[in-house]
Image (spheres, rainbow, N blue to C red):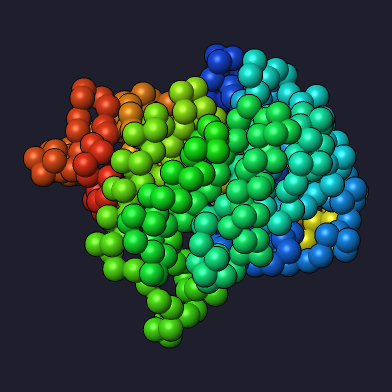
Length: 424
């Protein structure tokens, strides 16, 4: 996420700017924040995964100890957030479905009790792998207050599942989705990866069709991306990773879009589709630049403090985090470094904040109201260079400008990365 350790300064260890707009002066409807809880353990690290995850058997995990540490961190961070309204909760990983529901539920209860208010229909999501989700576990998660499950199906082809490093088979992926629905979850999302070597556009379309027809309310369809610091990245650098040509990936993108929109899904973000009223509220918070409190080992967070907006990352060392429960109450959250509970800290200037909101907002079908976003962060929306870039992209059909709003038309979504880069 582009974070950096900020040199410590006497009296202002994070080097933060002077207060620009105190959080408590905002209208209550603007004081919203999501909560992201990172569970860093999984049964096996997938070759394409770029998230913090540590392979470990479930029996070896300190489920309650980790919950205690997360709740302790929550108590410290909550003191700096005023009467913020809780907009969503997301348990990600790693594999949060490995966490005992009782322990996860204790964290969820603490989160709900800690905030001034919550959205009426609070979305509470847990990411699940099919290898750790069955009907009993789904029911247990529902019982502790989870409202939405996001299931990493990834593929329905056994050869591709093995290539991706998944522990489940195709039948197991479908069974996990069915278990979530049978347990009573009204909102179930599934993840699928397309663009894998050997996969045709017809196969990609068939996979999303099969999963959609199970009754999911949301589907994320991602083109396989090779990140440098992954096992796949290492193989790619050596020329040993089979890859699908870009033209074939583009064909799959179109086939997935046509299949899901033909079944009534809204293609509301480049990689995400939803039934009516079932957009992912937590992810919308990211794409729209909303604050989110990151809790847990290696978690990132972005919050507005009286000093300004900052992004942080917690220590990525599980043993260090597990032993932190007694340290959080007196922790200095503006100190960052390898030996601290906060490993990285980055003040966000208004210009950086706006650039990131532009980058993420343009992924949405409705785009971004650039002037409203700029007013919120205190930046200039239309510097001369951006005006020239927008005019050039409009002329090429790569972007649409409607007054203060910018959006990428669907027919240009395949070029979205290059379009966004041209504006930044």
